[in-house]
Amino acid sequence: MLLANKTAIVTGSANGIGEAVAHLFSTHGARLLLLDRDEARNAAVASAIAVERGRAIPIALDLRNRPAIDAAVEKGVDEFGAIDILINNAGIYPRQDFMSMTEQQWDEMQDINLKSMFHLTQAVLPGMLSRGAGKIVNISSVTFHLGMASLAHYIASKGGVIGLTRALARELGPHNVYVNCVTPGAILVEAEKAVVTDEQVRAWVDQQSLKRRILPLDIARVCLFLSCELSDGMTGQTLNVDGGWVMY
Ligand SMILES: NC(=O)c1ccc[n+]([C@@H]2O[C@H](COP(=O)([O-])OP(=O)(O)OC[C@H]3O[C@@H](n4cnc5c(N)ncnc54)[C@H](O)[C@@H]3O)[C@@H](O)[C@H]2O)c1
Image (cartoon, rainbow, N blue to C red; front, side):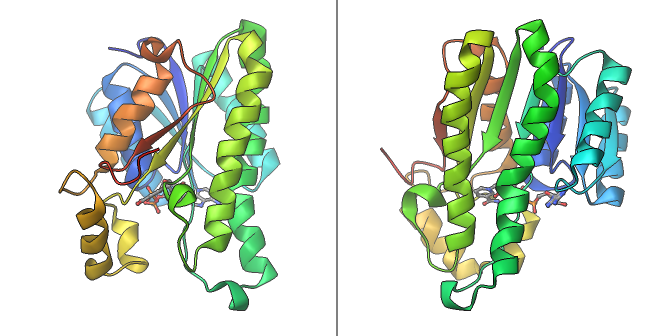
């Protein structure tokens, strides 16, 4: 039980990596505030956690909506007393060639993948600062290290996530608030089917050192490490969880 008596916010909890984080954190004793715009699936994740005897409150919101974020954090504090952990995970990854990319597509990517972290981090920080404790984990992507065609808007947002992590680690370290980052590789999630072919996935796995698909649980385990005392000597770091694809 690495998170006993802790409360965690997980964004993008209705699917994929966020769903795995929610389940794993619950089995380690965390109370959860689950934020996602997919209301039905998010409620189903919270119900499944309740069946497992955990506590999870699902909140349906768009992470571009600051008043909704502030209200969600307030509800979490009312219900659970404080927010100890923030997992900034929600993100989108539609492909688009750069020359045909619209300003709207660019802005949507930055707003969901990066600016939402600005909003949510600002919303939870007053509590963390007043208690002199907090753990924040931001989800970036290994594509930042690789570069990849048709993902300029995505990779720019994910580079921003690493930059945000480093700057906040310096600013918040003196207050005992930790900020770290994970860069997942090609993770086996339902959503990948909309953007990549089986052939592309096989080519990526070929480039990994580990010749198996990396799972949402693999990412969740590293989020757990970065959210508990096992990582108390680290802040501002970016951990690559990609089956040994990129090494640096
Ligand atoms: N899957 C991968 O291979 C992979 C690789 C590298 C990085 N990542 C990153 O990991 C994170 C999770 O990815 P995933 O594969 O689990 O995605 P996913 O599509 O399975 O889940 C993302 C969740 O975020 C929610 N979401 C999206 N936009 C939202 C918004 N504006 N407001 C509220 N909720 C919103 C969706 O409803 C969904 O439930 C993302 O940041 C992604 O960029 C994923």
